Image 1 (tube, protein in one colour):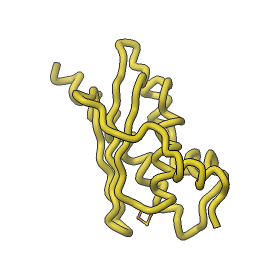
Image 2 (cartoon, helix red, strand yellow):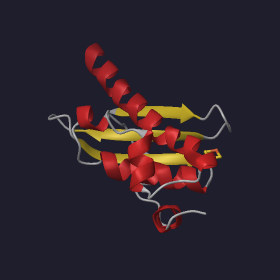
Image 3 (tube, helix red, strand yellow):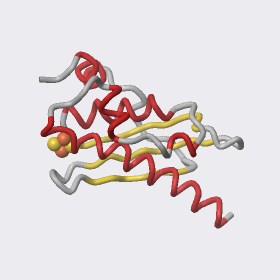
Image 4 (cartoon, rainbow, N blue to C red):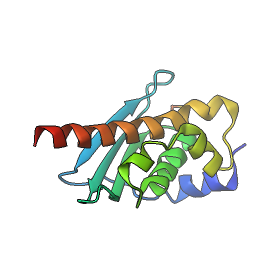
Length: 125
Ligand code: FES
């Protein structure tokens, strides 16, 4: 059984899409089910995440967790966003069924990869 928050984010996902020319992007694939999530970021000169979008192939929990991930990360400094864990995402959704916890890993993982992608690009510049 899903919480009202999960159903709300599934039915009205926030920040769906893909940023053109992102400052960072990350893809995370679930080892358990093969579903995947792409996150793209826009980051300003103060290293604040000013925009974030996602595209996901996944279940109800994956859509809701991805949507919540973008809400948690938007407006945060990248180093604060790096600390967003799957537990934070699950708690913010008022929980997920045990068998769906792995779906939340996509959000935290893709976000971290997108931030590391940004940091890697900065090193090259
Ligand atoms: S079952 Fe694949 S992400 Fe949920």
